[in-house]
Length: 250
Image 1 (cartoon, rainbow, N blue to C red):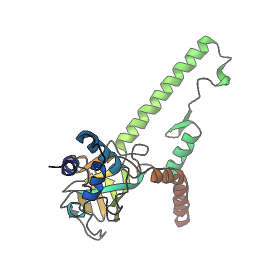
Image 2: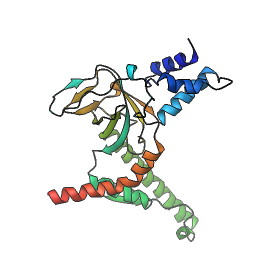
Image 3: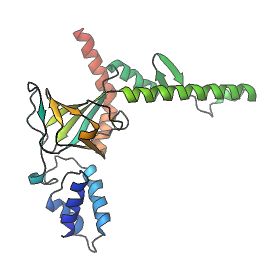
Image 4: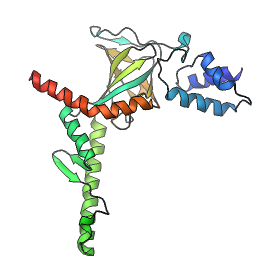
């Protein structure tokens, strides 16, 4: 088997989408040809940073797309593995206004837990220059305990969170996907826009929404840098717009 075939086989065995032969050949046409492990690593990195809808990127004959999404269909099951990319992620466990407050608090250097706000002051803050050693140690101890409590509560919130993604297949079709069971790697700040997800055969689509379970999807990682920047910069504005829309409907 030539290097092109070996690269494609290696990617398939690791749940990566199958690149087209012409695309893979661009990796093996260099002289001298790099070793196979290097070629496979390069192929992975480029796939993870690419837009799956790019013409000529994936092999159409061995890449499945999502079925036609119909919210009126009670349940459908994927008959093949389907590669997708993440276009959006939202924490449904928080109201949109709570998400706005969370982002604003982070921007101010604060962490929030429930309705209580803990300001995380920098150690070099001049405000603390006049504290004596005893009070400084006490304040430091209290600060550490408060930070630990915040971190523990945030970890618990992450464990109990439910996230909704917007996924897109290689043909450009978009679909909502929601955690049916918690997947630790999904979350605000840990899931990138453009990240690749392989929906496994047997994944359920209920009422037009993909139900995500740990054993039915593979998070491959990656991101599309331009998408990630645009999403991060526009997220606050989108949340505030959604909040205003909800208030107008109330």
